[in-house]
Length: 354
Image (cartoon, rainbow, N blue to C red; front, side, top):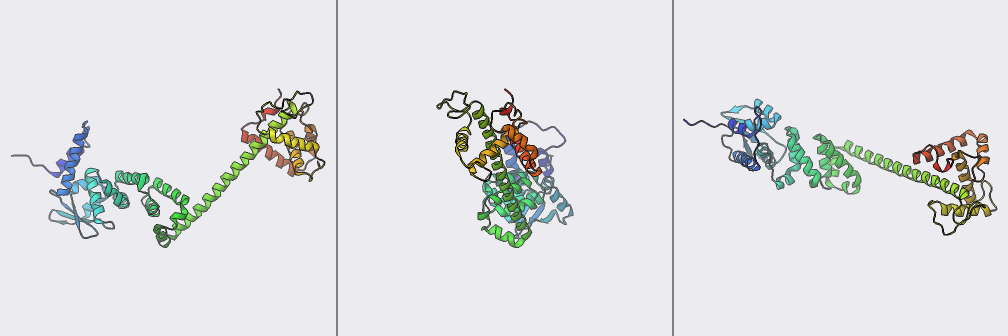
């Protein structure tokens, strides 16, 4: 008498948890998936009726869908029997989406056009019925092209509800980056009515993002200024000690055509020449001279060898430090610390003894 073949024996051929899996080629795997696909579409000895929104029915085998989804397994245990049939319902999504979902439980397959059309429904179904591999597929397909400006808000809300943090973060960033376009979409208008608190959170995060962006730009500009000041200090020591092109110590032989490695030298040369010739070199007088006085004082704050320093007024400013107010002292100290921190050093190399 020939041995009978049950649905369980088919499932055992597909996956065995008690024995070591055999190495099989791709053709065997494809043939097996085709077999499970035929079993799904033909419904041979199916014992489950799945009712959908449209009133249509999807037929399935309880052993297969129960092993693929722990939620469906619990629903089948509670379902009433009518002869050999158990009836459950999957509602809230189109009938075709349910069919694609159940087919995936059999074969781990889906058609590209089905995923394109039902990706949001499949994301919800995979979350509700705890099918993590399908959930990952939906997430990847959305990230790789199915996420658009039209469905961005809807996907963002579903990602939050379905606990897909990476996808929700991607959607959130896209919303902030394209807020003007997104705020005119139908999804945004619907969200304003159904989830006003979520809209408020997005608007607040957008404000925070702008604040962070402005703060980042401010710090970058500050860093740029600190680097420019450090370069000016290097150039000032270079001019006063070695001379550069057309200006320098009286005992140095200057060469006007000689290239200079200090980018700040050109502007500083002009400033020094103006300072030497200006008749308003008093505090509150000429703006350019005031800047030169500040550079001299900053130099004195950085200089570690005032006795041998060739920069004018270095020692004089060192002596004035003790007479300054505490407020001015703190202000200059913070400036010096920021300059050195920006360069990542403790002492400016141009002030080290040669």
